[in-house]
Image 1 (tube, rainbow, N blue to C red):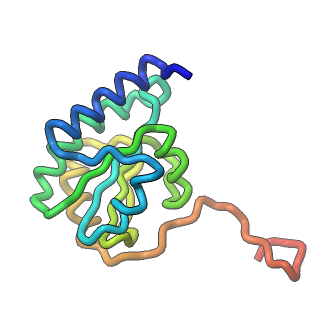
Image 2 (cartoon, one colour):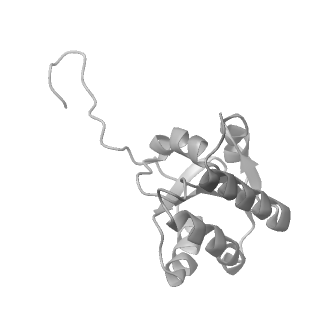
Length: 150
């Protein structure tokens, strides 16, 4: 199966982020170990730029935003197929998205493209947050004893 031209270009951009900035290229196999490693982690969830052109913008903004956080931070990037597979775990519904973790625990996300000032403000806030449970995505939970939700 050949990749679309936009996915091929995105993969090249992600490889460039790895080469120039040392960001980890993650996939479903490597994600868990990266996510639960000690310390702060920031993970870029990408989408096909043909569908979500803002993905390009965030790949440009990300390195500058990371430098501005002035934090000890591991950064990983996920290609669209793997990002979609993991998104529900963190309640991610809007692309592109950044996920913040500490010691594998959820700190929060920034969904969709924001202006530069928002990243400069939000990333340090997320990295300082207390770990919490990731939000759900609105899937009803049924009790085995009842026929309705809740």
